[in-house]
Image 1: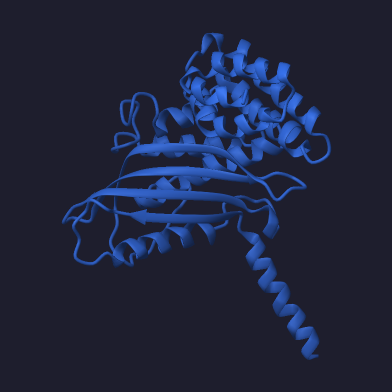
Image 2: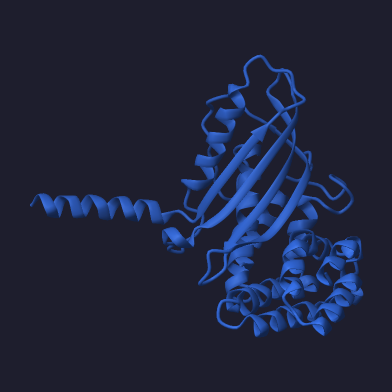
Length: 297
């Protein structure tokens, strides 16, 4: 009887742990802010981490090793007497490469225009299709973007429902600071990120997410040469797709995220492959052309 009871308890614990989809890491710093008690940063950090990681965000079942890893780094520049926080946020979405200990960053995105109100120890709650709290709506936005990216990387365009949820949050937050077309730096903001993921004109970038990771990165363990070729073919498909969308946000985000990984991928290629890769990458991502020269070495 005791063994049965232990088995039931373990089963319930495992079910509870595996129910959630996200493994979140949140860090909050405020090196330029004079505050008497910096404990609020730790409280904020822990509250956000628990809010994201303990909530059920999809109807899908996730095992422990399938959890989506999200990293959020808050660099807080101001905290007012009214508990309003001004911050930048760096989002990273991380995915394991199959049959490997290597983890690849699917997306890194810097959000330069984040404003929210937070009172220490307040309850963080969220409901779909409502803005109960600006901070939890912000977190839900990031989470849905992350889930959409992760799903797209395993199956073509399967992240669509989650990008739609992110767009819905943008609509709910209209006219609030940081959620509008003109916020942030140019078009590098939450408004355009959600818009691009939901816009059919940028479908090729979502398909690239799938082909790069599922057809390329996940195959490196069994055939590195072929996997490298498949990565090349995935990126080549962009050349035609971007003619009408040169310097789009998703193009910039992809290469901002992947340039270092691409350098390592092509370092293992043949001399002709290296030369061809440098030429292709310099055309698609001239900002990092000096970095791509490391491929030749």
